[in-house]
Length: 357
Image (cartoon, rainbow, N blue to C red; front, top):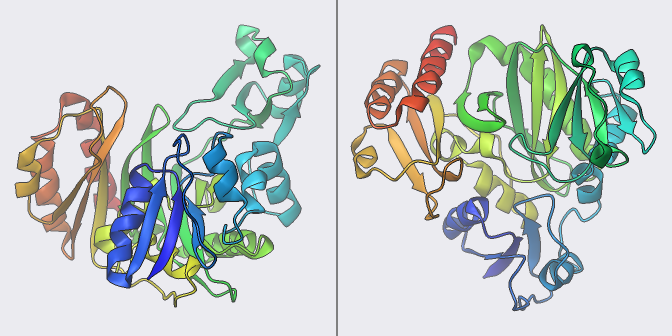
């Protein structure tokens, strides 16, 4: 049996392990802070559930293995300076930006990037963390702790947030899932919808962009590209060289989930164009106690991560899938009753977008 080691033992690693069983692949997620080094053999594969990790004996051991996949890409993507530089070199649309140096002044950033400027840490930061807004009309200065540690981006007045998940094998063959529409709140993904016929005409553009990125890095596995839609153009916001939260709907909505597709690619098994099954919606469960009644709702799959409940923590997700949108709406109506008041805006957004599909 082939073994795949996963650097990281969170929910994405757990879902990779679940997806491995039908393929007779043994997946072993490893906590980076573990005191015991994994016993990795020649012929084993090492992949990741995150693009950044702490420097520990375990992470050094795993990243130095011969079977560590895509070793060269993580430094380019985990550091936003290098990620932006790579996108510019490839001629792929991204928000205008510049590096924040030790002597950078707010005035120069506003002159170059406009009145509203978003600072992002070069490394670290996710779910809206590691960001700081500079507003010219408030006379903001660049905070001292941001000097030499970040990049600055122009504010993009986007229409909506889309993402594309694709996969590439060692021979350069590529497959893609449909574009996904995403809703974020305070930087945290709350819901995803796919497919959407009204953005299908943007699919070739998105595939060309992500395919070019994967080819340039000789990447093997699943990669996600988060984009802003601005009119009829796509602007890359972030890249993720791994399975992605916005692709979790594929567990219910495609013949091969993103998790299985990633394993196929890194284990040199055939990848194939994923057939989409009806309409899918993913609802992220944030800071909410598990409710057994969720399991009674038709057309749903519930994933609970087994974490301690804390405000703002990702605790699970619910996939809704059915060939008929009316059945998806029925499931949403039932789920709405079982989630707290702060989820009502999420359901309102999903219902509005389903009517626009």
